[in-house]
Image 1 (tube, rainbow, N blue to C red):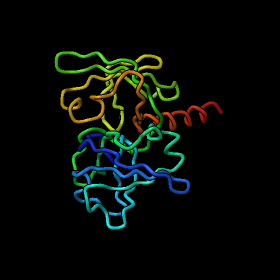
Image 2: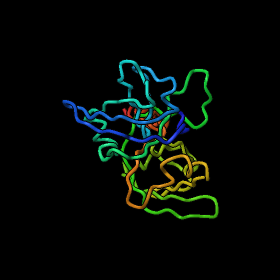
Image 3: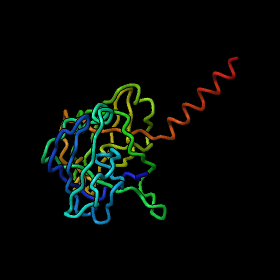
Image 4: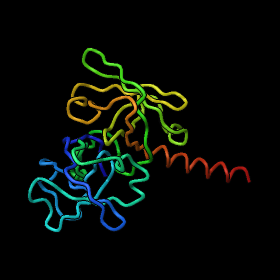
Length: 205
């Protein structure tokens, strides 16, 4: 479980293929401070498992990406040198600073435009209709692992406004039009849809 509050921008330092998986080695001095084998770290919003037998010993950690992860997320395009957003799983005693984030990416969106203001940027994204139906104005959405509030929505678009801290400390500050980002919609919306759909089907009988 994550909250979408990015702890640091790290860097993918190596990418290699191993059997049916792709292995990333990621540098992140903060998130590796207490990282152990089997711990979960969100990389651009994707929940991945630390596979280093002794945990991190040099400020880096390794993770494996299976074909499903590569198909669903933008991580298939990542190469050595790519900056990434990093967040450790939230402890039970921690603060829920953003919203409930599972690290289970639903799909990708494309940055259409960014409109700079004096101290903030407004980013507009397009996304598939099967995800757009879960996005509501003033609701929560996770973009590359960052918990954001939706400023406005269209049939297949949404916009978010980024404060200076988000621009400075996450990869959203360097995204450009045409870039793809990982999207996780609010899981509560999906549960509501499932429950209401079942109720409707029962009522119709």
